Length: 219
Ligand SMILES: [Zn+2]
Image (cartoon, rainbow, N blue to C red):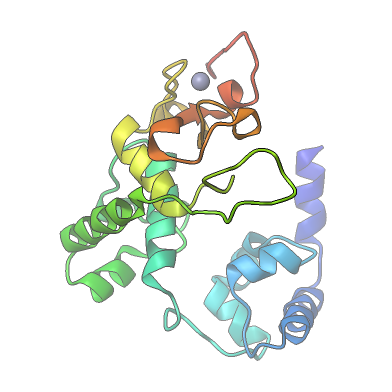
């Protein structure tokens, strides 16, 4: 069934894909559309367009939109992406790991921004360490419970927990390199009063996170 869906997407005419890009540019009132924006608002996934046109850059070109390339990427975005790649690989990413399949941005983008790949990784760790302070929330007078933190786990905290725990599930030991999908989650659930602080966060696999009791790894 999945293959049928894939096939279906292959049949979408180029014109329709281009119109969808333009529609979203108009919707957002922007001269260009990022991959994230497209995936949030578009009818199709950005990979359908990247594959059809060769790259996102070429898809923008075909749609007559502004080719933003890497001009407006913030350090924050680069570090968030690095956290995702790290979780996905299950280890510290190497220069050659930043392929199109793994990463939104190329290793060259990091190199240009930070000088060398090593310096990019150092900047990433420094950035993560700034995140030790959780997001504070102002006390809600309508609630009896006084929360110190918001439920949202920001990217810095995610990165820090990843650096501490490694890319393996803290409950069952599943590793990203063996196909586990890893997430950062609360030890004491936020709904039960657990705060969004470094000490109350851990790396979990998707299976443990949704609370299944019999954990099985992919063969
Ligand atoms: Zn697990």
